[in-house]
Image (cartoon, rainbow, N blue to C red; front, side, top):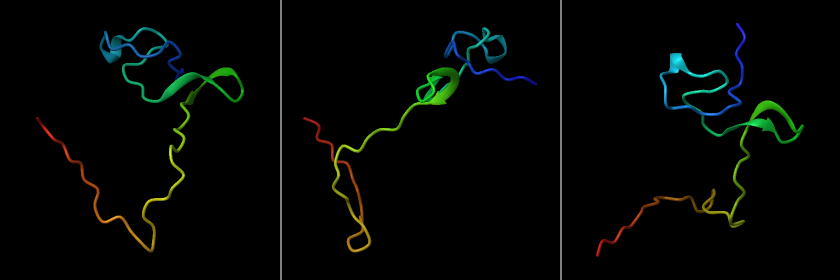
Length: 73
């Protein structure tokens, strides 16, 4: 069985069995071109860079809880 990479992207307009050629009903974090070799073969999107270099928690001071506070006016 030959499985081709969906280079034409996502198509949510049809059922999975009726998908146009080279499309997929569900994709997540992929792109058709590999950036390292600059050729079409399918690859994953790069990860995000760290915004801050400061380390939070660790062995000496572990994180006990993280919570979200929302204020509604």
